[in-house]
Image (spheres, rainbow, N blue to C red):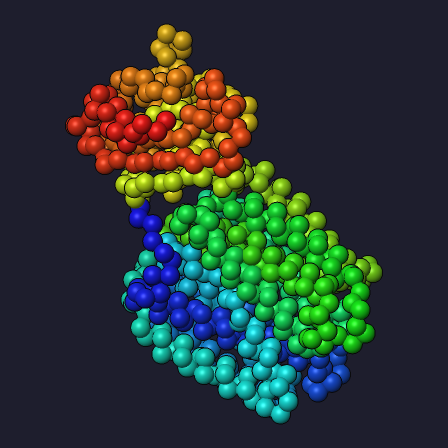
Length: 611
């Protein structure tokens, strides 16, 4: 399990061209869509007599509708056919759509522009299942890349040549995407024998049924859809927030979109670093907390009047309220990245490979339904007399309620959050040779037992879930028992205390290893009372007799001074903030090499003198 920088992937053909196509496609969507949004907000009279509020909602609905109509078909096509050719075909369709949009912009024809927007949504609906199923093991699936809104928002307000500039840039981006798509490596179809169901209703219902087969995946899809609800309701308010609430110019809308997009891009990149290059579900609750806190503050900040009566970009940036607004938007984007990236990665990694594209399509369908619901609820709240700042406050409070509900259904998120906080706020963990833990397949991990949080520390350092075998008394420790039960730990007792529990534990261990899981044990059988290692017991030999699998020695150092150890002098160490601890992993033992004495010697050597 080697840890490597995500940026190295950009230089490899298996990922770089694909990322380029995705980047250019996302940029093109944003250039055209944000240009149209700003035109409809600030230059409505040049296109139609309809109100800007009605046009904003109409544009949003037209872009979302194709996801409801075509996502199911798109998912089937992505599972049936080779993906490189599909990518090229979809990007070529993008060029045709951008040419149509360019004509609409130059002719100032609203009908052509709305048709182009609908077709753009169609193209995105077909591209989504392809791109998210292409490299499911990576986390580079961010929809809003920092700076996407900058180009479209800045170009369209340039006097004389701005609209023509948008038309030219969107077509050039589409052409560049076609060229890059031919460099994408071949990707064999996972289900070439699939029969396409062209009926959108039955295909949609079937895709949704695929998604519901794995409860965690389906609930993660609901969590992703909620994020799109939150984001759609928030971003849709930007033009009218800038114009009607702040009294600002078009440049303010562009600035808000830039900061929000940069925040999501930064949050997605930070997510990779904070997660330790693994799917870290503990960041999801962290992200939802930020979405609520900074969403509420954004509502309060936007309700505060500015000192300048006419708000241009310079006046906005000179006012402290403007910087508070920008900070809140950036923070919402960052925490949104923390929230959304692990959920997407979980959906990709835990979906059945033969049905992955159709599950992604089901995700797109639910995303679209939630965004439609966001628009409908926003209209209802406005009809009830709420202002935009009040709407944003309601949205932040709704996010808190939804988050609590989701985490009550999937306690794994909260469990991982507890583990993540332990390592990032209590201890400073140094990991040595974590790559020796296999990415897949069964193995037994053995470690010295220093404190009550040993299992939490090791779980935080390991990318894969571990089924811990632990003393039944520790299994029932208040608060920690939540982690142990959620992590599907295996309580065990000595034969003299509870022989039935002992036999059930060995049976569970065998089942987990047969399923290809990692099993963690503390062969000492108890916590150390003096900081030294006790003799390793022989239970490991019984495990290997039934299931001969590799055994990986590990050693924890630094936890003897922890408040969670049985150290009589631990209170005198409590003044040390963020104490350093270390987890060292040794070379695996083959099952025929293992004896308790050899494992103890290996763990002792890994630990060294540092207890």
